[in-house]
Image (cartoon, rainbow, N blue to C red; front, side):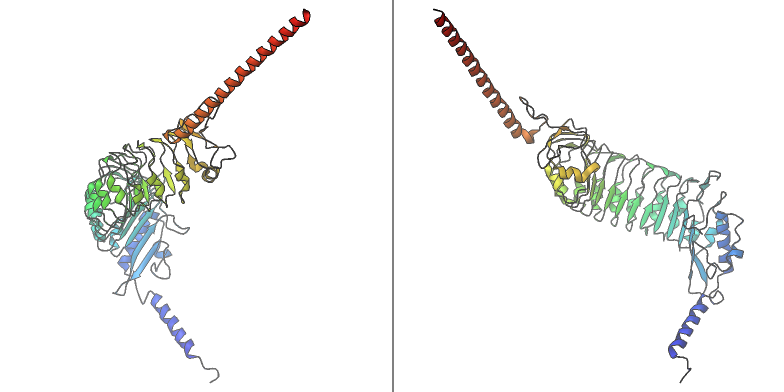
Length: 477
């Protein structure tokens, strides 16, 4: 019939009406207690000027607040599940100079994620501490707790955080927290991420961190002032992908138990005081991609390690670790290796040209060692690497013009090999002895030939003078 409304249009109108009715606050209301707690909690951070009820009468509906998310629960009410405070977006909630934690935070009983970013940072702001109590009120819901870049956030990490038994991510980074790591954090058995970096923490790493956190994927305790040994219990972190304790004051040996971390991709122990050499157990960590051990007095030989086992390695940083010995050929078998840093050690011997044949190599640092002999890399290698190749401060190392080096330009800080007359090619190691012997013999042969020619010339000149004298005397008679 002409003018009849199609069935599809009616169905579409009904669906739109249903969606609109579900978004109506009267259909899914928010408890007044929940709404009031949200307003007062935010007001504590942004200032008393903020009129939540006037600006956002329906914070989980049509007047939503940037950084605040809600979910509809089975009882038919909206509850706040996410709160992000800080200048993430232009219209994000920003902290005032007098920002502080409000006790109303703990009245948001359905809160799953709470984050504070770049707050308590004003030069006029007084120091603020993390609340030490009431975290148990959020124990059944909170899964993510993050405090980032809050320079005015000081004091100790509350032990009460260990009551957040459902927490999956704890991030406390770039704050000014002091004191020791509370062992109670080891009770958070569902943690996937533990990042407590770039603070002013001291003391030891609790053994509990490795005993109970079997689900942990990321542990980052870097850039603090932690002391003591790496606990052997860290070997119990069976799921761990990333371990970063760099830039601390840790001492002792690298624990053998780390070999149990079969899924570990990144091991970052840089800038500590670890010693005892490279433990053989590390060569069984087959998933490892980044091994960063620089600036530790490890000592030991680089050759006593089966590098060929670490086939997934892409970044190997052993600079300034007091290693000795020659570069083993097994390192050149690492087909995925992009960065090899061996600078600042006591390595010696011949630099293998096989290093240039590594298909993925992007940077090679050999400077500050005792390498000797001739660098036998091609000019194409030097051009490709540029400043990413360094070999200076090896007094007995030189470069020549073989292997395609036609421009007679070598690496910075390395002298040319001397092939001068009556002199051997200086600074050659055992790997070049044959060349040195050959050059020496050639120089001796040339000297011998030159000496014979000179003697013959003197003999001929004397004979010529004798003939002239005889002719002169004969003509005068």
